[in-house]
Length: 323
Ligand SMILES: Nc1ncnc2c1ncn2[C@@H]1O[C@H](COP(=O)(O)OP(=O)(O)O)[C@@H](O)[C@H]1O
Ligand SMILES: [Mg+2]
Image 1 (tube, rainbow, N blue to C red):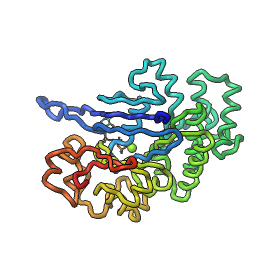
Image 2: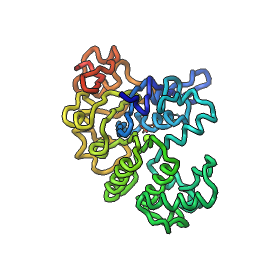
Image 3: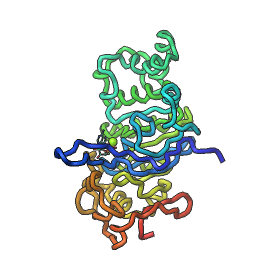
Image 4: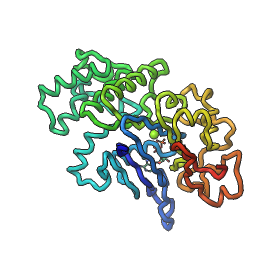
């Protein structure tokens, strides 16, 4: 059996916040609190959960854009967190990210062609002429015309700019692409086109994806497996189909029940049917199972002990005392 491309093990990120008073200890915000998962080559793993549950922090930790509190990340057998600066540069070519808002990730004064070729310049991989040719080639790879090279981002629609962001991420021929809510900022009519593009590119370039979304209806068709996050913890991992057919964790069940209501993109999936209250603060997360304060099936043990992620067979894992 070949080794997974990405292995994340017991990853933790606590942010130290400003103390509220002169004599107060600075509070810790537990953004990511011990998560483990792996992604096989060519696979798409979905990371889903409500806004603030630690999805983007996980993405930034994997790419080592921020340093973890503890835990490890391995890409293709290489320990990302033990790398020197020089090794990290080389490793960055292998993993790229596409953000939610293409406009904020593109330089507004730089032509889209120059932006696409920029990673080649940064890594010293091509001279100006080569960069021009490669950027034109990648404009076509993402379904745009090579003649758009000189256009500026404001001349493009959101969907076109997201194509540019994808081209820029792919030009280094990475193995892993992290897609952080890549269609959440786009019109509903454009989303399917971008998802189809991503799906085609995955086959064409043998890409492995981590697909982040707060909206379970988007990840359903797109992902092979899904990890459900709640307040910095994974509560369930399963193959997509299994998760939709028989979600085991009450939180996954609520997310799935809520799908018809989250057609419209809100900042927070607050319409979770059957769930009371808001997501608690990650500064003072509930004891035991973090979901117990909103869980319709709460038992005494749930506020006392933390449920371990338990294997239910076929790679289906769930952290819940009901199982
Ligand atoms: N640099 C930071 N400093 C302090 N808190 C942060 C920082 N980045 C993220 N957070 C907090 O970490 C939690 C998780 O954030 P994030 O990973 O962006 O969530 P998601 O992407 O799932 O919406 C949130 O409570 C957020 O406010
Ligand atoms: Mg996010």
